[in-house]
Length: 333
Image (cartoon, rainbow, N blue to C red; front, side, top):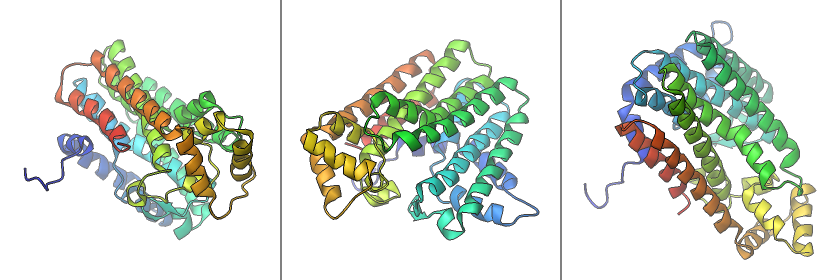
C-alpha cells in the first residue's frame, strides 16, 4: 500500500466482510419501502436510505449474528428492521429540530414538507414491525419494540432537558441512552438472540452496543464544536444554534462563573443569540477544559465497549467490532 493510499477504516472492513448480507439487506429495504398507492413514500425514503449512510446499525446486527454462528436468513430481516427504525427517527427528528441538512444533503422536510416526513416515518415504523414479526421470535419483537419506545422517550426527554441549565450529566446520559444507544444495543442484542447464543454472550453484545452508542453520540456532540462540516454532514455549531445542551456545554455550565452562567442562560435557555456568541461559547468551553473532559468520557465508553467483547468467541468479526469502537473515537483525535 502506498503512502498516499487512504487506510481502510474498520467500518469499511466490516462492510466488506458482510458484503453479501448487506446486499440482501439493501434488496429487502428497497422491496419493503415500496408503496403501490403512495409514490411519495419511496421517494422520501429513498432520499435518506440511499443517501450514502453508513448502515452502521444494521451491520452491527449482521455482525452479532454471524459472530455467534448464525447461518439462517432472519438476521437480514432484523438488520432491515433496524435501518427502518433508524430512518424513521431521522425523518421525525429533522421535523422536530427544523433541520435543513442531513448527511450533507437537504433534509426530506425541506425538499417535501413536514407532513410527508412525519407520515413516511410512521410508515417505516409500521414496516419495521412487519419485518420483525416475520422472524417468528417473540423475544426479538420485545427487544425492538422496547427500543422503539425508548427512542421516542429519549427524544421527548430531550425536548425539556436540552434547553434547561439544570440538566446535568446524569440526565444527559439518560437522553443519549434513549435517543441513540437504545437502538445500538438492540441491534447487537437481537443478532445474538436470533443466533440462539448463550445468555452471557447476548448480554455482552447488548453491553457493547450500549457503550458504543453512547461513545458515538458523545463524539457527535463534541465534533459539533470543532469538526469539519463535510465530515459532520451538518453545519458546525448547529447544536449551539438549536440551543441543545450537550455534554461539552453541560460541563462548562457546571464550572461557570455567574457571568458565564448568564451567557448560557441567554443563549441556550432564552435563545437570544447574536454575532460572536458561538465564538464566545467556544472560548468558555476551552477555558474550562470542557472539550477535553468530554473527549475523555467518549474514550471511556469506547473502552467499555471493547471490554464487553471479551465474553464473545474468538472471530475476525470480534476483532472488527473492537477496531470499530476505537475508530468511533478516533474522529476526535
